[in-house]
Length: 142
View 1 (cartoon, rainbow, N blue to C red):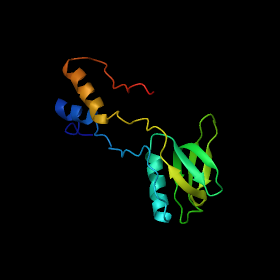
View 2 (spheres, rainbow, N blue to C red):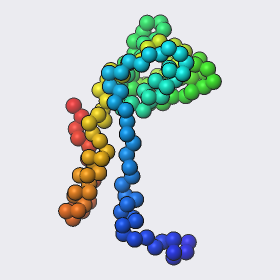
View 3 (cartoon, one colour):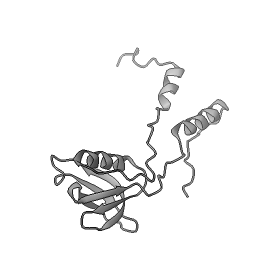
View 4 (cartoon, one colour):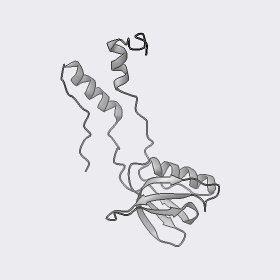
């Protein structure tokens, strides 16, 4: 590496310390209409990004309260699936998109009200006050 690459101003380095946050939709309480394949796929993408539990109602009538942590979108609904955890169970489970009849965003969104911008403001205030070894700590969950 050349010495030119290593020449950064303090302001450039500090501007890289905090990346902008991602704005999440407030989905808490939403029950999407799953009229077709596209609506189901879109709703399950949102469920993957959601930071709370959702309730899946399967075509069999079974209801599953779940935290969706992974998904695989295939060519067909039968080839697509979501992976989830259920409260009180340690094992990972999965269900095919083709089996899902209804989706409810009923669980509390664990990041609701805890905005990235507020964290950055607190960090910058502490930094401006000269504090050292500062970290952003999230508020306690209910």
